[in-house]
Amino acid sequence: MSEEVKTTETKTAAPAATASTDRPARPAASGDRRPARPAASGDRRPARRPAGGGRFQRRRKFCKFCADKTMNIDHKDPVLLGQFITERYKILPSRVTGTCAKHQRRLTTAIKRARVLALLSFTPLHHD
Picture 1 (cartoon, rainbow, N blue to C red):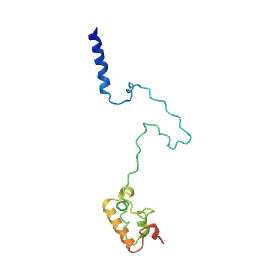
Picture 2 (cartoon, rainbow, N blue to C red):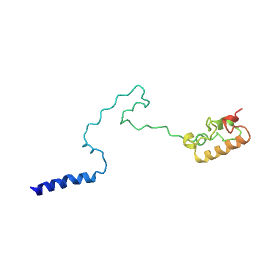
Picture 3 (cartoon, helix red, strand yellow):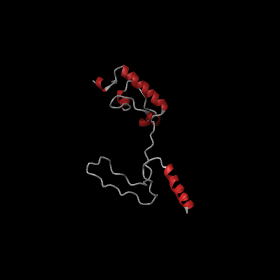
Picture 4 (cartoon, rainbow, N blue to C red):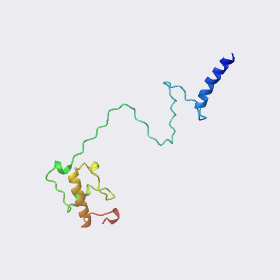
């Protein structure tokens, strides 16, 4: 009988030795989860969208200058160049505008030349 007690003691002592934290053991995985909390009136997070919807497809961007061969990038055309700068007068990247690499380089050069010639402002503070 003393042998049986020793085997049960070693069996119970082994898991306690491996658990180094004071947290309770994790419950067995089951299909039911915690009930959802009701949304408080001051909850700032937007409601979640239902899962499983189709993939959102965005229109493919294209280079305006490649599509319309008559459109030239000219540093003396502030109206055209104004479409490619932000309200803080930063040059928009090609991933936003959709311009190809070749025309993005030409746009950047034209915007910088227009700024030097005072056709475009460097910052909103320098605006007319």
